[in-house]
Image 1 (cartoon, rainbow, N blue to C red):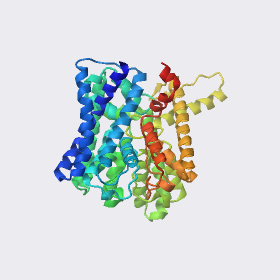
Image 2: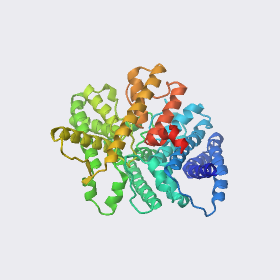
Image 3: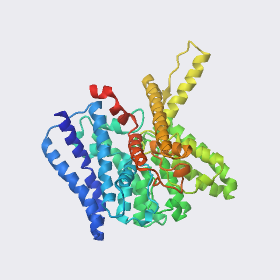
Image 4: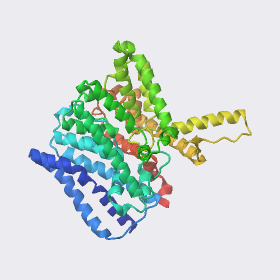
Length: 481
């Protein structure tokens, strides 16, 4: 009975695909291209056929979830939405093989920004809109949207968001989790609208402005142009994009607190301060190393700061061929790939808060050597942090390294050179998209064998769900409960 109930909940969660696909479907109807209409009609019909009976079976019953059900439900929902999201590509008549369609869909919902496409501009606008939409919806989270729109899942909804949301600690900005989800989505939509208007002001047409607003704020980084943001060659667009990539990497709960007038919370937040310092330090280092390359400090700052914001926020957008940059600039970007954005943001990676915790704990271990009888604690946001947070962070970082190592070895075994394999593993685990070597700014993932693409798709989803949510499902103890 419990399994049947979970399947019904999953069917309901996947019904989110209907409002997701509706704009692209209406656009396909407007173009009158039958293949594109069919491409979106098939997944919409499948979704409705599953969701309507599931919704009718619930009536007025409410259900609660524990961690065990929450992990499984979130994972299966993300797998299901990735498969549904692949169908418009597969049935579009544009030559997508199923593995490539799933790869593009997983990249979108995981906001990775990787692609197998060598010519993006060859795609019809309908698919470009869908591609950007998957990034935008995946950026804030499929389950968060489900909880916001379906009060039926309100009881126990926090368990679902805990399984999906990034970061070692989760918090509710309101007593009710459904209200929290709605507020976060309203902030997300407001920032997207503002970014859309600024892109219009910068000279983009309405379609490009919308698609780029979707992917920038979602930390996705894909574009409607083969050259990406470089196509526009606009300092204003570069500046706007840089600012919003940085903002996308901040914890969205902070925006809610700012709206409530709690301005000091931003400065007192340990993670936000560290995120700002890392960004400033990396930007300055890269800019100085590029001064001789571009012959102008202003131009060096334009490209250096943009690329620092892009990699730190795991957006993965590219404004210059950074593989031609000096070694110091490349090394700085590589370090940023190991950091990521803030918890509670649309960014991926290890997260700044975990680095803060480990840095503080390392300092405590050093002081413990000097003062063996001393008692030292990790303070976060001017409060004493829980000891179990330190253990959790250490465990996560070890797991993160383990996943990267395993992915690197499997990728290298397929014939990829070791550095490129490591770069790809780091990129897909951290949901960055670009990297070095065969996944550099002028390359795609199209050359990888099919089994590696399947692996990358799974790793991208796992990275988006903070690894534990997926790894716990492979634990025998989980199924013995």
